Image (tube, rainbow, N blue to C red; front, side):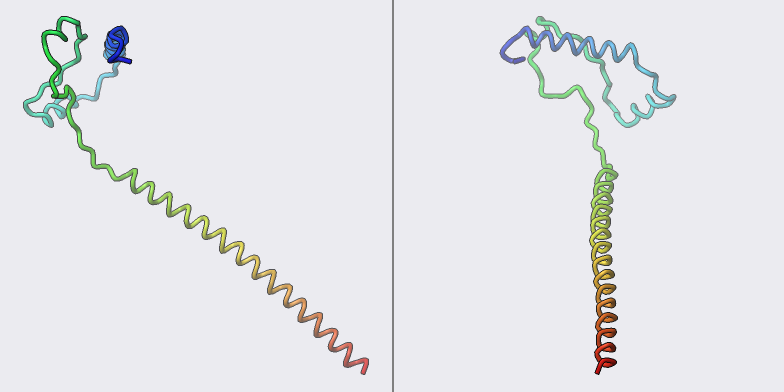
Length: 131
């Protein structure tokens, strides 16, 4: 819709400016020394705030392919490791339930067999007494 309707495009641009202004006005200052660390990581580049775009500026300058944002690479394996541990926990949990059910089944089966053996022994003894 932004491409088809210029009113939507200008409204979105105005909304972005309002949101950025709100964020700047209500921002919390970073810890001391943060700005120096950022500047040390980005040599030769300046971080600029966005300025509201006007129709005159759009016509005069064609849009460049260069981004206004700094590319950041993150090598964080916490989420991947977390997923693997969760999968391992689920597997161990399911296996423990399966072994619990199997153990109870074989316990009651052995108990019923023991009772059956006792009953057969008593019937054999009664038959021997009656003979």
